[in-house]
Length: 398
Image (cartoon, rainbow, N blue to C red; front, side, top):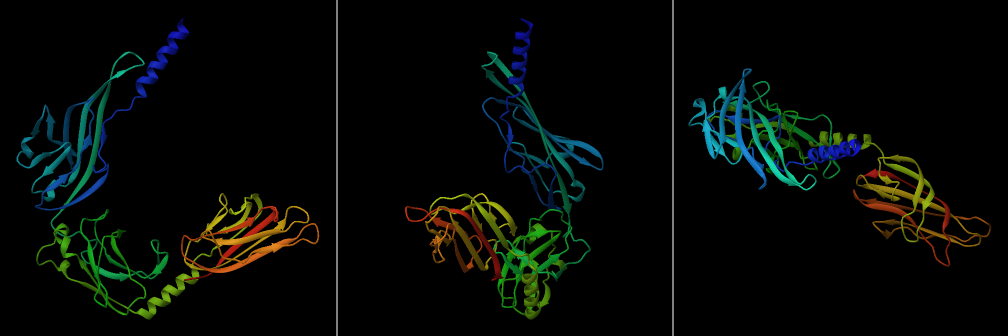
């Protein structure tokens, strides 16, 4: 009897704590440790919000701020009433359902802000034939930085050129990179910057890493002055005064010939692409041959599970395949395909002895993502290969 009772209690305990509370923060709510930047005199929204179900019962929502090691309550929301403290009366406003609006912030408002949500979730639990209550107790926090001017690392902004070429992952092409900074923001700021090329084309960019904005010059690189400035469209979010020197354009001269040399050096020093696979593991007529042994896969283009090579970069490639007859006195046929279409001639071996090897090769111009595979034909005329190999490598990048 005691054993049964213990198991029953254990089951009830596990069921109680395996229940998931339906309360959840909305995807748009800032995550913990998020940093927000605001300009002095502006209104700031702390957009915390969450989702509730019909079973969730909200008890209260409370907001706090920690400055100089001291924590102070900002406001509370309970029984459908928003109650700010005296220090924040007229400045803090409620934003459904866990958000807060701070009006006319000053530099003294900088600090760590947090929101605490308390409530419960009541539901009927079929395993115990009774109602069960789960507690809702969740907190989110962020850091608010307030500035009365643009935040820079050393009081100046400049345009510089990265001495090394950068591989553009979107196009898999090497590009010359310009940098604009350095700023004092640890996370991407809310404003963009505007680049102008020597031929007058304007690009807006928000790519921000290592406290600098990044710009990849379109190829071919034109010789001349490249200018950058904070975009007038978002200048108000940069806390710029009307007469601020940071509104001025910054210029850098780029030598097109020097840039092309930089790109050539990057292409020549880029890692190679090559693979070698052998010993058939899976052979089906018209399907990629899957090999059991891959002794080399430089660039990770060959997939040993599918038998398919995926070009990691644009360029000219060479591929070769070979296969040996699997049954005596029957020929073997192999061929190479690109994106499923045959690109090589058929390699056919007509045996005059017990085993004969067929081979194929092809040189092709591939785009990144193109697929290449070695295949065979198996029917009443052609035998399956008992052993085969497949190799390929990048001859030159485009």
